[in-house]
Length: 296
Image 1 (cartoon, rainbow, N blue to C red):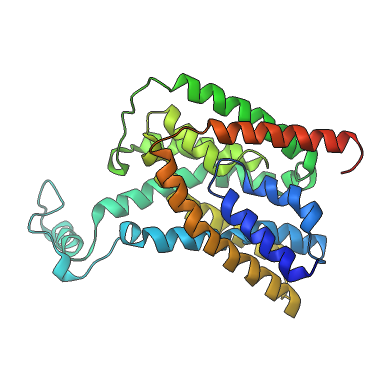
Image 2 (cartoon, rainbow, N blue to C red; image 1 turned 135 degrees about the vertical axis):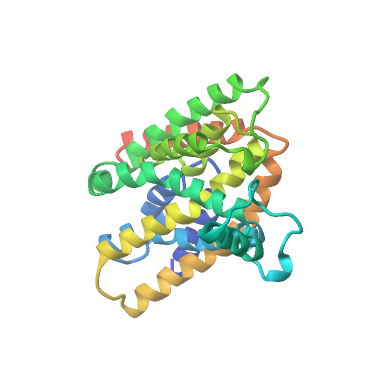
């Protein structure tokens, strides 16, 4: 199979699985065994992470109006965004913010950064160890099964619970930190970053829609940081073919992500994640059987 076709298929897998609770990294590791382009191990290790940049761009495009914190002076509200007017330097800051800034979006971004911190603190020291020990089909299969079972248990537990947080503004700083801790679970391939943060958010009281939307926004700094780390570790420049492969994967992941994100936002309003949990369990069992037969 030509290298470009393999790359497009990997981009499709990334664009679909990045946002569904089935683990994109796990799928790239598993299907990479079959669809691997003829590239070095170092390049493919970097490719499996940096391809996520295409998926990130889809979030930026779809939610730009909700995320961009600045506006022109014409967008100024009649009432101040601040409960108490200040004077002096603080007063000038309030006037500037009222004239050009959506403060609720600034606060949202600060909460997102709080959510990123646990992954930075835990993930950076463990990055090389995780790459060398867990980025293999069998560990991925085990995590697919384990978290598939946990997803079912969590869905059953939350079936009759009513969420206390229905909008992004209601997310507290403590909620943000806890969601960041749940995201750390996804450092192990096969877990699913989106699955861990969405279900973690639901566990602490967020509505499905709110948890999913926050997860999409959290992906921007998290995945951008992870991609930058891999690019730095890869070092050096890219050959012509490596550049084509990386760009093709990112563009494909971007286009597919546009549809996947819209699908998931509509899906979570009406359904739970049990179908994805059963898919994880079945896929994990298949991979373990194939590995036991010596085919992996």
